[in-house]
Length: 82
Image (tube, rainbow, N blue to C red; front, side):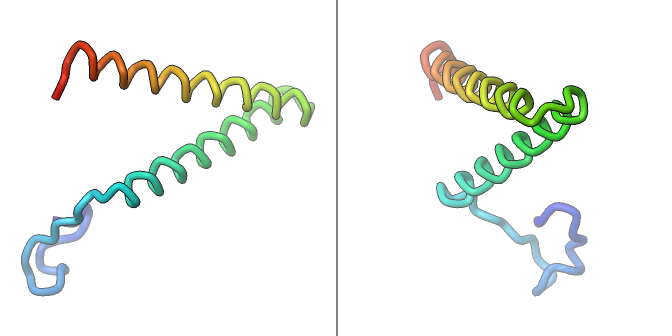
């Protein structure tokens, strides 16, 4: 069933199953990263008042986050395969 929607509000009255396609997952990942970048950039800009420093911090942090996520995924694949 769609989250946050009562079964009576779903057309046909039944449960709706949304398949998680690769395209949908990729779009969700991209939009999430955009939100993360904007929020970090905003916070660092408010804290430092320096645009160049804020951009530098954001780029370094987001690159590190991406690398750590990849390593985390590979560790799961190695030690806890599906």
